[in-house]
Length: 215
Image (cartoon, rainbow, N blue to C red; front, side, top):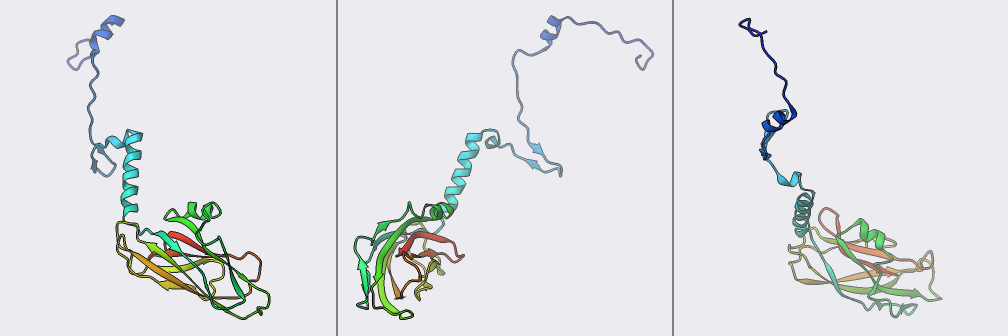
């Protein structure tokens, strides 16, 4: 019944009548989204296109990575030995250890390589507890777009430090290189085939650049 008391008549519609009521062209209106708190969010096509969203995330990642410190190894060795009971095994300085250290490289993307800086043998006659001096050096370059942080240092991350736990490096301008000398006090290893590794770290302790290994 209508409010004025008159009767409302319902007329059956045929299928063709229903089709005639629909528009032949679909029109879509994009509106802003209003959340529960009443804040209006602008329409973002990237939310609807997975490819655009992936590209945007990749660009954001590249921007973040561009500001992080980077380093590459330009050269290393030879190992300078300070005792006749030490001998360098030839052919190992500069050896690529990436495959051997792949799990470490995967875990820390900013660590871009793993290199052996030398292999040293302790000859018979050395006494347990006696320290044997050795020096080795590496040349690293700032391969990033920003200067290294002031708190950059080279730190031991695996194995025996041989008296070389850490060394402050400081800031280094992009494109510039620095020679780092490791002053080591070697001794008879507790096991055969020992390996020690050092890596550059930034002010937050995040590693980057080459992983340097001495065997």
